[in-house]
Picture 1 (cartoon, rainbow, N blue to C red):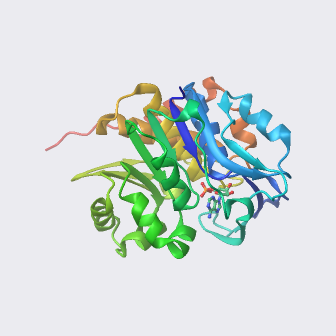
Picture 2: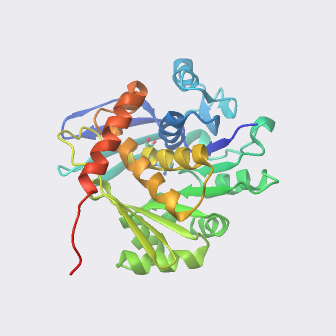
Length: 308
Ligand code: AMP
């Protein structure tokens, strides 16, 4: 049985940043999530869909990291989901230029038997009806269900998104999306409104300004590491989510205290993702590099102060 099941897009991305451009490279929410989570050595598998145009070597890249791809359906006469984005000069914001759903448009996910009882479920960014269809195929509720989504699905599939949000434990979204979802400008008020929709934990990603974890009246803040070079932020949010769920699945402790460590683990991995275009940096990342940077995170946030 697979311990961690990941649902999300497996995609072609075309990216433009102030530092360069790429044509159709490997991307997608499930791709980034799984590469990130693979650093924790938990058995994982993806449920997704691609077209006949998807290169076989991309499966091999994932399999090389021990990520099971049996649940990625290949529609031979279809085209893979395609996303094109362009970053602004500050790299904190981007415009989506193209979202071609292609084979995702009428995807009916089938969870392979081997993955039908995951202990941890990561519902990565894709159509909420697909996220729901996966939940419905899992008879025993996983220990933790985490969902990531984006403005595209809020704009186009609000009701279906609300149905799935009602079923999850943790939502990870960026600050703009939290505001859109809740209709509140204050992120504290936004989190409180989002609790009422279902999730007991709300993680709000703020790009280079770190991430906030809300639970009841508690808030935890994880900074983003100040980096010398940021090349391409694509996938940082998914890499963060993959690091979070990877840590939770490895430690099997779903307490708020451990979620704080999960948020740090996610921020740490996301800091690598942005250093190169696409998935490149995540493919070469080593355990030692991760450990060294975790230490930098500790040093960044540790201080001693006397309370008067
Ligand atoms: P992030 O930078 O973490 O928000 O994620 C970027 C990834 O999300 C890219 O690799 C895209 O392929 C994927 N993506 C973009 N738009 C969507 C969408 N509407 N649904 C699912 N995945 C998407």
